Each structure stands twice: as C-alpha cells, then as structure tokens.
Length: 336
Image (cartoon, rainbow, N blue to C red; front, side, top):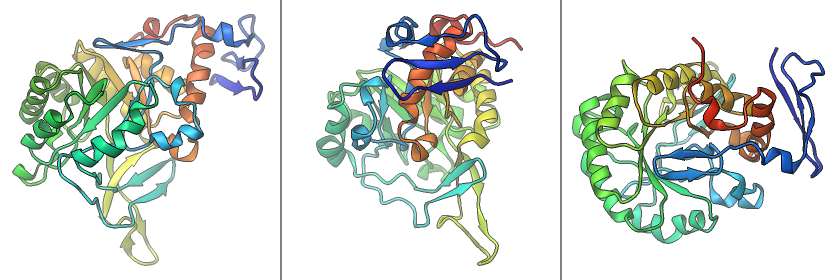
C-alpha cells in the first residue's frame, strides 16, 4: 500500500502516515525543528542546493513568488532562451490528456538581450540559485547564447538539446550522440559555471546520449524531456494542437521517465536530475531510488502552483519514516 502524506494547515508541523496505512511506532507529528533535522541538501558538481526540488524549464516563473515561497526550493530553472527572438508555434498550444498534458508551445524566446535586461533579474532577485536553460537551432547558436550569458549571475546552465537542428533537417539535436558531444563541449568551453544537459527521451539509447554529454564535460544531465504525442478532435476531425503534435508530460510518462533515469544513472558518473510526472514527495523518493540526485517538477505546477513547496515540506518526514536521514543515503539504492 502506498505511503500517504497529509500536510497540516497550521504552523506546527506535518502529520505522516507510515506505509501500510496503520499506526506504527515510527509515526509521529513532525515539528519544524524535527523536519529540518533531515538533510535534504544535494550537490551537483560544485553547486550545493538546500534540497533536490526545482521546476522544469518552461513550467514555472518568478511571477509566482507572490503565491509560492520560492526560497524553499532548491533552485529555479528559467524558460529556454535562444540567442535570437522566437515567436513559438501556432495556437492551440496546450491541451489536457488523461493523466497528463500535451504542449506545443514551440519555446518562444525574447532573445538574449531582452532576457538579460528584463527576465533574468526577476529570477536572480529570489536569492535562489538560478539555472538558465539554453536552446539553439544550430550548434553555433548554443555557443553564442552561452557567450552572451557569461557573467550574468547564473548558478549553472542547462543545455536543452531537444531543439530541432536546422542544419540537419530539423531532427532534434539530442538524438545524435556526436552532435550532443559537439554542442556540450562548446558550451563547457565557453561557460564559467557548471553545465547541465537536458536529454530528449526520443532516442534508441539514452545511455549513448548520456555518455556523450559526460564525455563533453557536462556536470549533470537532466532526464528527460517530453514525449511526442497527439490529441485528436473527432468531431471536427482535426488535431487539437495547432502544430499537430506536441510533447506529453504529467503522471502518464512517469514510469517511462523512471526507467530512463535508472538506465542513465547506471551508465554515467555524473549526477542525474530526474524529470517526468513528478507531483508528490513519494514520486521524488522513487526517482531518488532509481538514481536521480535531484528532480524537476513540471506539469504539476500548472494545476497546483504550490506543488514544489508542498513536496519539499513532505520529503523530510517521508525519508525519516523509511529510516533515512538524508537524500544522499537514498540516491541509487533501488534493488532490482
């Protein structure tokens, strides 16, 4: 039976039900002091985060700081920025699916200049480590964007290699190990901060791409981006999304994302950031067990903007209930 967590609405703590649904000698009421005795900190290269929870790129913004205590998150991840201005895909861009969401936003971007002057300062003002997601339609665009972002306060860069490669017929850059290695090595050479690489799941072998990123000098890899899918309006006989197809995210993809994280974590010696269908502390624990050192929360933020803060507050008691006092004890401990 699943672990069930119940957050109290007052300031005194969180009530935790132990696996099995019955009262257990380990069950207790956790005060703020007791919650903070659990070590939730994680290290990604030379970056130390207070906890492993951060938003997925494109699924959260600093404007939600009036609703969510951003200082409780481990890090913030920006929307993907390109060197040039991008308008994105035609409407309709987002639609719900059973247990998930389809998006075909097309990654609109204000360009580097606008991003540096108007967008980035709002992230940096939160005093939470900011990870800038960088995109490119060509190999050189990644390098250009990296150079233009140097010295502007990012704690790290996350290279989004799921972008279409205009130099090779529009195939995602992240589907070819040699291209990934070329992109990432160029970014690493031009960056003064750690470089993470967000991988696409749409490959024959996630292991080959993960190893290519590691060879190129990546500090960590994020596994994984959305899965290609489609929604059809049978009455109108049209695709729901303006672009026809989009990226599937949410609970429906979690089992696939877990497998990819497990495979990647066993193949590389750098940290893995898990992403895909995470909406609860229990989900985070599963990804940690599979080998993730940190996680990103995406679709859950749309329905519950407070989801990440809720997860952080519930993670400590959940770890303690399983006899664990730190995140590091859990990472990669899955028995298969």
